[in-house]
Image 1 (cartoon, rainbow, N blue to C red):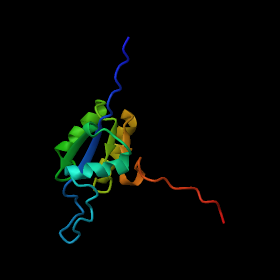
Image 2 (cartoon, rainbow, N blue to C red; image 1 turned 45 degrees about the vertical axis):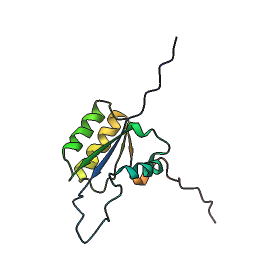
Image 3 (spheres, rainbow, N blue to C red; image 1 turned 135 degrees about the vertical axis):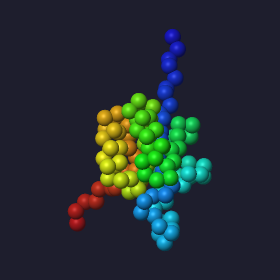
Length: 127
């Protein structure tokens, strides 16, 4: 009997092109990840090694656009096992909604602050 092939983990990368806090004066201050293909290499720093075919880019012009709805539907249906996003550009309600939906669905929420591939803090003994 043949073993089933392992299922590829589906990862959603949710990006807001124009965060509500961004202004012409702030420049690229709130741009944590671009949407071009060059930044896929930067995902390895957040996720560790991953299959590029497992990534689905979801881009909204502002918070709570059509990609947000698709993201939530994908999480609740089990299509995504992980979400990579920055929480700062989201509204407070969106942050709570995303955290709750990930908790209920079992999906992993990866942000720049808790990146899987990022170096972990090391324990320093007291002086």
